[in-house]
Image 1: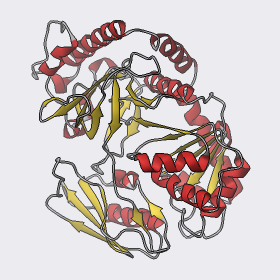
Image 2: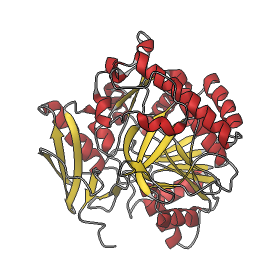
Image 3: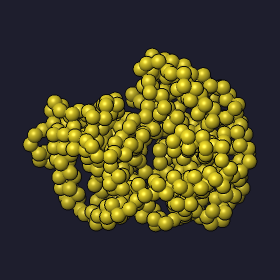
Image 4: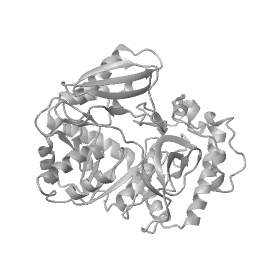
Length: 460
């Protein structure tokens, strides 16, 4: 929503907010779905049945197409030594240079294909584990193909296109100081109940469970950290939801085996985890047999350990080459996340490459003084033009320190917006300090933890 629409929404009564969300949801539905999405989904149902050799041929053909497109039409790739002759096999992928996140912060004309100049482009903004948003450019047709892949994933989980869906994500839906339900809003255009992830606390979790039982979703789409306290509440009262969903889909955070087991016991259904990103670099989805599958029509995923291919069962850096966005080709994109290399084919019968798990995105969760768990704060930094990197550290029960590496001065209106958005999510009981620092520390594996909780959960 625009700034004006956001202010109007904040001042509107709940029934009007539901209508505004539904209108916006209808706009997004028309953008993401349609004839292009349905056609792409039909093609994906067919390619899913291909064998290993046919899928490798498909990948090699797509890889050479993307290399030629990048070399001939994207200024960023000019002079980077991309091969002129087609690659003979997938093993030659390592000849290509790596692409980093910082490379994508160049002007749009440098990182997008000249074939799309003058074409209306959609903008998609990342969150990312570095806390630094990126802008990704694509067309409506590309967006619809992207959502066709998610449509196939939902089919693996037994979910049809018209299912009732409950979602928990990082949207501001409810005033931060609200202490009574509803902590959710309706998107009537998508048959979806949108839950606030910022109001889940020991005092409110019962209302969330009651709303889920009334709504009876067939699918719950959520960050693991949002569902975990709800699942603990359900199990503590000795049962499950009265009507179990068909499936839970999780994303954006590392799903541990412990949390997976907790969710499946509490909600009485299977959890399907997946890895994707706004960059449209890679798509990794779990099948009904539990394996993580690289979607080969989407692109190629490498798992590298110290610059070499990781062996079966070894963890390494996740590097992705994408096929689906010719506006902004990505060759050997260093995602900043890590994964565990697979050990062989899956019992589901699909010939897709497998991984044992996704290790990235294990951000800490902030705990507010009233017991709410807050994760995924990265969307608030989109408005700060001079921000290079950021880290949020909770060093006391009622205090967070926002460490920022800036490329210029922080404008007053940007600082005010940042403080306001943090306060909206963390509530009035949390003190907030913005601190400019020259650099941010990395882990032993060279990764930046965007959220660090040095305090832990308060005693219950």
